[in-house]
Image (tube, rainbow, N blue to C red):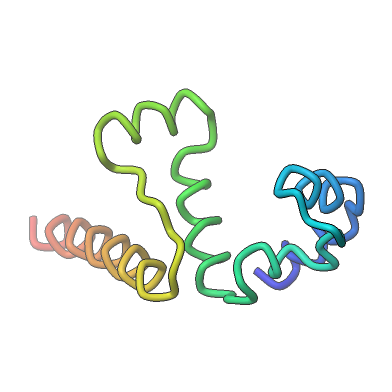
Length: 97
């Protein structure tokens, strides 16, 4: 995750555009700032985006109520925990078969 953050930070233009979209006086110096300097929120957001890599996938997930707004550390932890529990349950059930 830290590597992804560093890679994104090299794209100064993207940070500047994001800052301008938010109407910030000063541009973000680090993508983590956008997530309130909370690595867990960044990580949960990245996981969710990996699950829905295309815009059409995200749109479908939103309509089905599977796409969640992750704005707090608590929401990030809940999302990560739910994802892990769901996948571990699938793995354990397949191992039982």
